[in-house]
Amino acid sequence: MKALLPLVMIGALGIAGCANTSPYSGDVYRSGQAETAQSVTYGTITSVRQVQIQAGEQNESILGGLGGAVLGGLLGNQVGGGSGRTIATAAGAIGGSVAGSKVENAANRTNAWEIEIRRDSGDSIVVVQKADRDWQVGQRVRMIGSGANLSVAPY
Image (cartoon, rainbow, N blue to C red; front, side, top):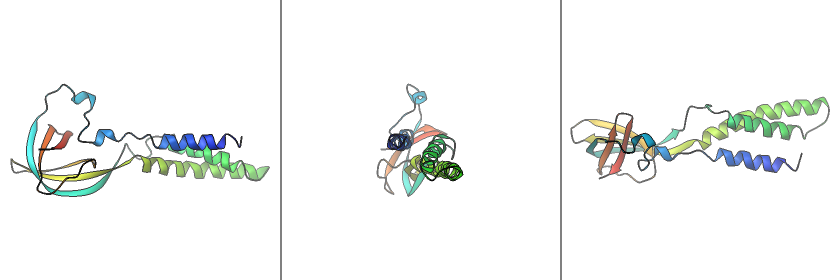
């Protein structure tokens, strides 16, 4: 049992790092956007602010909590004997579940930019996308798509 513990821990940590944050980039198109006409408008960046995107809803997945509970239970089971071991196993499972959920939520966070753009038409919009390039106030940009499917690209 003790020999399996390091393998279980490595596996759980590896899974926590599997969050796919690529869709939040202005350089990545979803499959439904391929081979479809999209509108293009132009504008100038008036404000840039660093923010974070939380992938999915908080606690949407049980993977972190479940993995943490298993690891915590295994670790708690190594402590004491008899009813003390049972209590330690239960406490380890509960603590591990809470910690695992927090680790998963942190792993699913992506650094992003909140980009405020004054369109050439005169109105202003805000677009949030992955911080995979540097944006500057005064920079000319293209906005590709419409509504909920709008990304910002250099002009």
